[in-house]
Image (cartoon, rainbow, N blue to C red; front, top):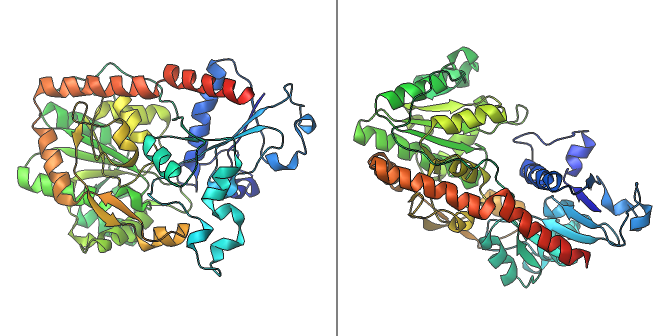
Length: 433
């Protein structure tokens, strides 16, 4: 029998069945659901255990485990992982930095020492296997002495057939509201939180852009996540538009949960903070070609965004797998991305446009949150983003079509349901034995 656990303690306390986009650790729930799809497709029964640690043995499970050694997969952040006694325990985790938090590196009175699960090396040493989404994470874990690590990425559904450029326009799109990122609109929205300033024809604008020979760029991220490097993306696109005098569009889909996150907070607090970190005032942003989507979108509407775009832009400095990039590539979009952390597994010059990154220390709030110090990552700057966008805009149609097809093929080969299911079946057989 396969058991799984994915909801955080906070989600359980609030009675949440699912973790909404933007909720802390929601990505673990997303990965869990992707694996549940594989189990269902392969006819494997899987049952959720919200608190696996309460069962003294497999025979005390409800219903009792039909096998002597069940498999328990925890899709949770490290400090939330709990073991199912008598089972083959697996932790499916993400990590994007070159150092793991452990007590040996902390002062004796550090508050992180109050919970043994904050020592990530200790946590990962307790389980039978650790499953990760990319080879970068596997290398980091192994460098910390962990020998039980397997690359087991979340599967990506729905690989397309590749794209040609220019696309055939589809004016039957639904309308999706967005705010053009001009100085006047930002000030109006921050002062009043006025929804009437939201444009109601985002997808129609993308089709108008394509009909006039323009390119449509897309990016999806949480505006409060420092990994996403939002300032470089926005400033780089604005520089590209100012230099080229083109009428291309950048659509930014912000991941907001509607409670802690809002467009008003993103424009007044989160994004300005990241601009301050690179010494550029947020008030310099004034580009009608950047359209920000704040609303929750269904899976069908997200698919429409992918269909309406030509390129997916990822300026992130660190990813555990990079699901939005992979889903965009599966839909045929050509990625404009770094080859850092997870992206080194699937982005290259054959299927995308690679941005060159430089080493930089991670922000203090990130190092403080995890209890790690002396950690670096690699980041792209606005000028490099602008250069890559210009290269993308000048791609010949034949080159675009070739890279689009290559992007689809790469995702299907590495992250499609069939290859991931085969890898999963192999590990289940080994763990059951």
